[in-house]
Length: 292
Image (cartoon, rainbow, N blue to C red):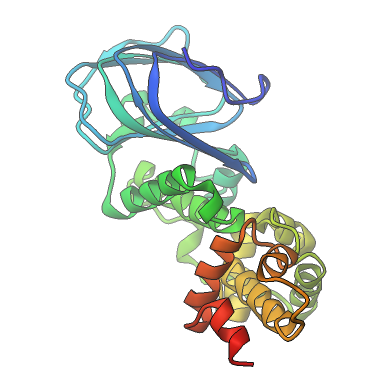
């Protein structure tokens, strides 16, 4: 059995032996990618758990709830299984490759207030095929687990919000949710507060959408939409551009090495800084500095 990667009050899980295991946990989002051997799993916790099997099961049975009915079903590759927070899930199946995504129920409540109640959905309907968008987002999250040093936490959080929206759409059969309404733009006063907050904390590698949303007194989901309505950029794009502009301003000081600049503007390592700098400016930090 793999040691439980969560604090005991967040999620408890026991399962067969895993291999190729990778995981990352940031800002209320935990992502795992792994191969599970055949056997039984029992899990329950305070987060929603969304699982996507990247390879098909030949044998798969599940029971949701301590006294629920055990269902033996087909689970083709890239099926999505949704385990609501607070409900124990028992599984018995053969081996498969998996992506498991754990998210705060508050995020899902903010996406479709009053319209998404997973505890009221028939348990058999909580296991269904994914669509291409949901599948792509899940694989992108799995990539952040495999390369945690190459992806910043804000991008992971942004992808996680998009994944939650796609999951809600799947489980509500495309029913109208908040994303279909035009989001009001962030007010100039709130935008200024957020911008000042970002500038004061550019050096913090764990700066998150949740942090910025709290400054604006909005949920992360509604803040992301309102921020883009005001700026035309996602919070991640905005923060990345601010970091690169600050890095450029530091370049003339030759006594400051590129690694020092990378850490000073919030990148966890120089390699990630160089990759992002080149993507934004079209040139590497060294070439940019040499041309000054």
